[in-house]
Length: 140
Length: 210
Image (cartoon, rainbow over all chains, first blue to last red; front, side):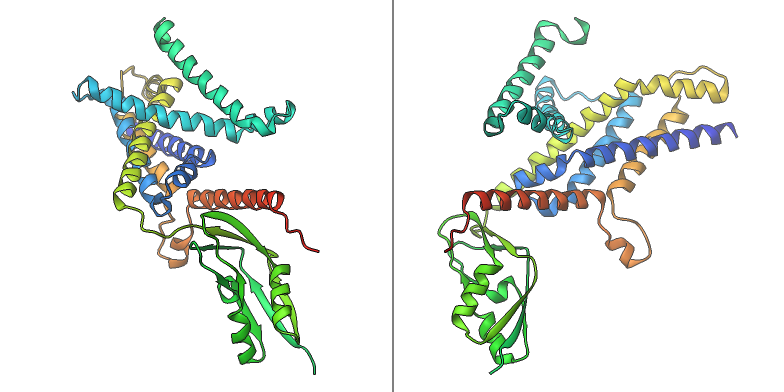
């Protein structure tokens, strides 16, 4: 009985979190953007599968503490691609929340919206570098 | 002589090659009681091809103008949209190597991105602690990293994501054909894009007639 409750509650929690995670990524339209940029319309299913599998694998890794030794060079590679994704994710989130259109309308800079985007981009990169290098991340 | 009634149902969008001209039959359906006249109308050229890749549009009015100048005794009825957006793109074979490169890039980005995203979420909400708390609630024992909760949670996460993304699993063929939420989102995104382009085109190249 004890085990039944434990398993069913954690399984239910997992389904909820997984569903919410998938719904969130759908809502902010990251995938359509990727598809538009690379003109790979037929591969949506592949992308979804990769995304789901990666989430599953890294959930298991998160709890198990399993590790592989791929060397320091690999972290550069993984870091770069995680960064690209998170950059798109954050921008897509800001876009979904209509931050930029509202600001550009308030300040009447609709024609120069590209400059605003470049400013945000530089600000984000500088902020990230400052956080990690000068403040030393969350340990600083 | 009484005018012939011609019904024309127009599509919303058409993609064509560079220097490809459009005949009315490419843009939609034509109905008219005389088969002969229908063939003639269908093969009327309504748009002359452009030399470079671009976006353009054609309106029902322009089609009506072309048709009435060619056929005197017809009465045209349009059914459907009044503007058609034209996507002019070269259909040369894109190298499959580039395609594979793009695919790999997107797949790698999504893989590592999803990894970072889910780790980030679990760290943020302190999932290990939460599951330990739940374990204590249900069993009254303290245990670090209770596998009996972690493993079902992980499986549940996978199940949740795949049931969200994948098309419905069902014995009915109709149900299986229904699109997933991401497909719908993609379609909406494309529609928004076309709406925007149409709006831009109407602003930039308004048809100055008369």
